[in-house]
Each structure stands twice: as C-alpha cells, then as structure tokens.
Image 1 (tube, helix red, strand yellow):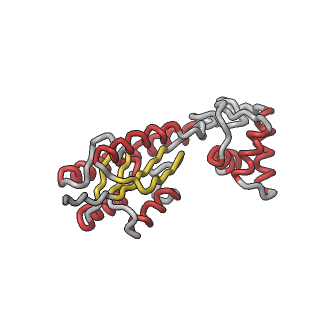
Image 2 (tube, helix red, strand yellow; image 1 turned 90 degrees about the vertical axis):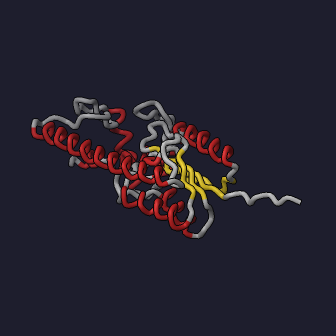
Image 3 (cartoon, helix red, strand yellow; image 1 turned 45 degrees about the vertical axis):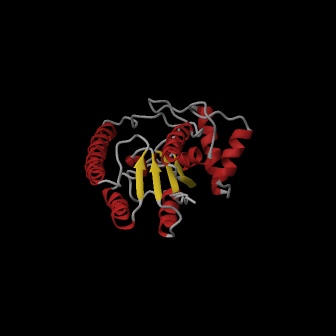
Length: 232
C-alpha cells in the first residue's frame, strides 16, 4: 500500500492599507489569488488573517491580524504562509528578516500570490530583501515630500491638501450638514458609545458617508483620530 503524503497546513494573510467603502473588495481579490496558490500546491488552509484598511508603513501601527499570525506561527499552527505580495505582509525590513529567518531556520514555506517572491529559495530571499529596502526608501521619500508640502500650505494659511475632510470643502469652508454629524459622533463617543455602535447608528439613520459608501468602525475611527478636528 502507498502512503499519502501529509498535507501541509497553511495560513493566508490579507491586508489593504485603505478601504474607503468598507466592502473589503481588495481583500476578497487577494483571498481568491492566495487560495488558488494553496490549491495549486496542495496545501490545507487552516486560517486566514485579515487587516483591512490598516497601513504597514508605520511599525507602531497595531495590526491585530498580523499579531495573531505571528502568535499562531510561534505555536506551530501552520507551516506555510501565503500573501498576495510581500508589502502586504510587511513594509518593515526588520519584520521581513524575522520571516526570512523562519524560512531558513524553521522551514516556513512563504510564497506570494503574484509570484514575485518565494522565501523557500535563496534567490527569493535576496529579492525580498532588495524589494523591502527599496519600498522602505520610497515610503520615507514620499513622507518627506508630503510633510514639506503640507508645511508650506500651513505657512501660507491654506487648509491641508488631499482627501476632503468630512464637514469641510476642499477650500476649508464648513459644510453645515456634515459638521453636525461630526459633532454628534464626537459627543456620542465621549458619552461612551463604541465604534461599532456609532457605525450602526449612522447606518440606521441613513446618514451618507462623504464618498457614499457604508459606515464601519474603521471609518468612524478615522474621524475621531483625525488631528485636524482638534485644530492641529
């Protein structure tokens, strides 16, 4: 009798930096591609880890899905990891080195759905290190350009450029209807409402978002944490 090779338990990590609608469509696209890789390799997907609308550029940013992924790997829950692209997993060279070490020393099979990196090979690990360094450098250059441009606008007495703030026009003029909603969000949160309950209240009341999408805890948090509402 022939023995069947044991199935390799695999995890999938899905992340998008900004989901303006809260519909997780980008995450769904990543999921389809990653599951196709798992099926092609005959791996058994035991868990998915999702961080929707969370950036990986700032190492201080809390990523619950990523944190749980790391903890489960340490517990030995999976032996293979699939993500759509390395920069979906991390943009921090130090974090990438942890995964490379896991591939080299502990046999972790880490592949990307776009086919650009395979940490099971030395060439893949070299490519991953180069790509992470280039990506990190671009993040830093972009941040410097944006900070300088915003500082110039502030010195000229102009409102910040970019995405329109709920309650204001792009020129910084008040939008009364939206401003009233923002005030209520802050008042209710101060009174003890949770992000989830605030999102549900806004949805139930038929209040439109700035872009016409659905309210979710992430969009509510984006308002509460925006320093521009504090005049900074």
